[in-house]
Length: 115
Image 1 (cartoon, rainbow, N blue to C red):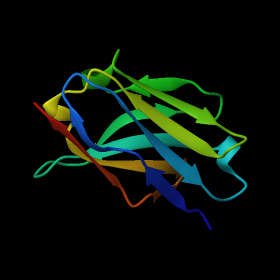
Image 2 (cartoon, one colour):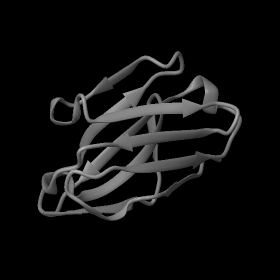
Image 3 (cartoon, rainbow, N blue to C red):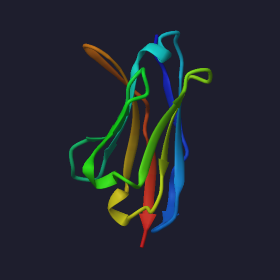
């Protein structure tokens, strides 16, 4: 059984930073790709960043150079460091574990960036 629990986020001023964490259960964390998605009101959920089991990373264009995804396999935790935040980054952020063909989701955490 896979469980993902996000933490972090909240209300942040534009230009500031915050970090999201996602703690995973299960013994397959180190072998799994992990991703952060976000969903803004009225918009579809979009992939923000992904990190493979070998720690290769990829980012959506709008966050490149500002966000960093990382993982700590010993702690079974994936992080999303978000710098230079913009109001358009406001969304619910979801952690995911990708085990094809399934994707497991956390409950989501709200990030609100005020201008």
